Image (cartoon, rainbow, N blue to C red; front, side):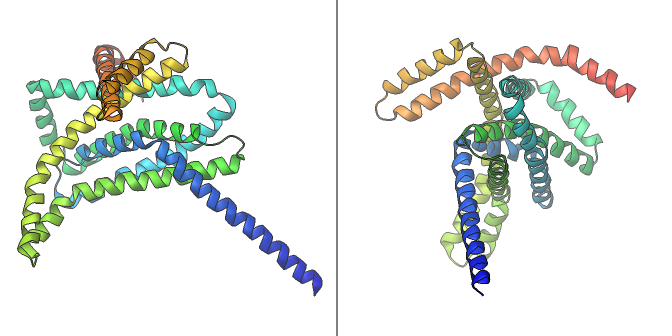
Length: 320
């Protein structure tokens, strides 16, 4: 009997340690996730533009499709890759992130050029009219998942770098996995709320018992098209800013810190010049200058994509 009690006591002790480990892992995941807040916000701003233009009944299925793709990116591809790279080739992380940043710069610059070029609008409308709704939806979801992959790579890398040293491999794996799920649910839950806000507004306007409720619903319905357009702009700007920021940080880590140091010092001085809101001014200045760098890089990459990468990709497509 005493042996059984001793065994139960040992089991209780082990359970207590396991419980503490779970609590610690959850805390580490939340803390590390908060370090990637900037990239998370950018991800949330980028996504709604992929839903823009579709019927209301297809909005949530599109968001769900992107959510599943994002979880696959983080848990199946990026999590193992982050563990392998951090263990065997930590030197490769910055160059790979810089390649992803260059892609974001290119995509953002291409969208800016498309907005300025009215001929592109006609060609896109013509293509959209030829595609079935299902094909166009699939194309949009794939494009969103591709962009999410780059942003998710940054999120996972920032989260990994925020973890304390000395964690066991299984703890690091669980923290990264939990952080990935928390971030994905937060991002795409927010996106779902944004894209369905107009339906909520319609319900409030039509079924609200109070005049104030109906008025608020009407305001939401009228304001949502403008909000969606704003998010499209913010999403494009976020891609350019994040891409430029990734390249600047990566270059600094590789030993070429001149541009990063200049922007950091200039933004710091700008913040000091406005004592009422130094932090906000410093962030805006840093983000703006990083965006300018990102836009320049993106514009420089457009000819390479058009005359080099696209023809090569076309040759491979024909062979396969």
